[in-house]
Structure formats: structure tokens, C-alpha cells
Length: 143
Image (cartoon, rainbow, N blue to C red; front, side, top):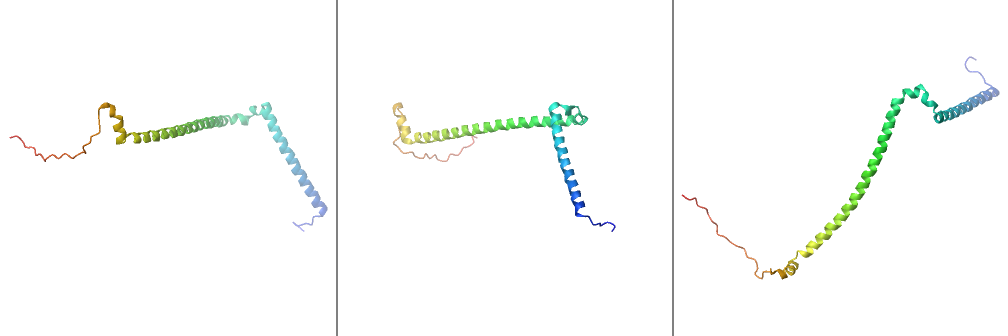
């Protein structure tokens, strides 16, 4: 049998056991690498590597973008506070407008105006208004 050979159960169990051992070793190795990265970050060893130095302009760019993002957040917060304050002020001005409008409407009546003008000598006319009619006048050119 060329390609298909019979594998015994014992050999199959050994192969599976070897594969599980390999997987466990890989997991341990990855965990150690993760711990190693943490150690490098803590003692500053990563700063001396060529990879870090090569990517330094990109890291400065990322840092600049983070500063811009933080500034943008503060600006947005300031604008939101101003918007809330302006809405509150607008509500107060609207209520003052309606109050003054209703006060004006109560004072502009004919009777209220006549009562306020009693001491000044101005009084309400008892004669009803009439339309004044003027005959049509034609202008003549002096000759």
C-alpha cells in the first residue's frame, strides 16, 4: 500500500498526544512572549530597538492625533455647555417677551389710554371721526 497505510490505534494515540504537547508548548511560549513584552515596557528596553526607532515618526504622528482628539473633546464639551446656557437664556427671553406683549395689549386699549391721560388735559373726542373729502384738483401750467 503506497499512500494509505493502516495506522494502529496506539500510533494514532501517540500522534495525538504529540500534537497536544506541541499546542501546550506554543501556548506557554506565547504567554512568555506576552510577559516578555510587559517586562520590556516596564524597564524601557523596547526604546532601544531598531524597530521602535524606525517607527518613531509614525508614533509622533499618532501622539499628535491623540492630542488633537483630546482637544476636540474639550472643545465639543465647551460648545455643548454654551448651547445649554443659550437655550436657557432663550427660554427666559421668550417668557419675558410674552409677558411684555400681554402687558402691552392690556395697556393699549382705548379706555386705558384715556384713563392715563386724564391729568394732562387731553381727553377723548366725543365726535366720531369723519372722512375728509377733497375735490379733485387739477394743476394748470402757468403760461
